Length: 171
Image (cartoon, rainbow, N blue to C red; front, side):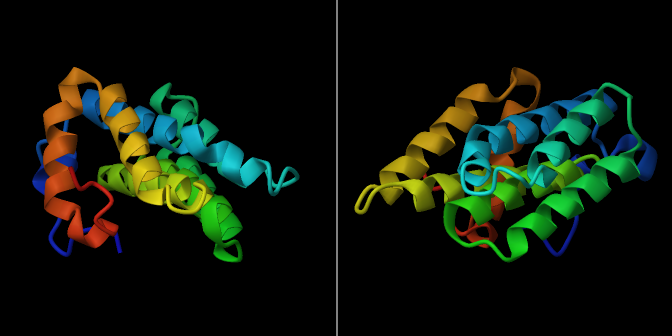
């Protein structure tokens, strides 16, 4: 599970009663897409004929540009998670990261799922004895990529949800 039992109003759009602006929602989606894309090669090298994870990343970016509806991005995210279900290790985690990224258009709090699964993918792909270091490097890469406008929000979210995200955001 990556979502909290109680929704954080900072990840609910203003029009739905929260405090999240559309521009910050878009930044969260783009950041999640970048996190997922960073490890996508781990899926594509093992399953080159399955386009679903890449399509989820493309759809959430298209949603940000206003080219597809939220439901299309969410559906593409679901298809990417379907691609992950029977896969293990790095490939499966990478596909789940893409699926979570696609779902950010629907629920902004999926941004952390994309990041967490990407870290799990990096750990799973690392040579024996190097998984923790690979996870820390991936986490730092993600943090370095954060736009200033959402940096504090995401870092706080990492602290709050670290326990339900497999403790991948330990500092």
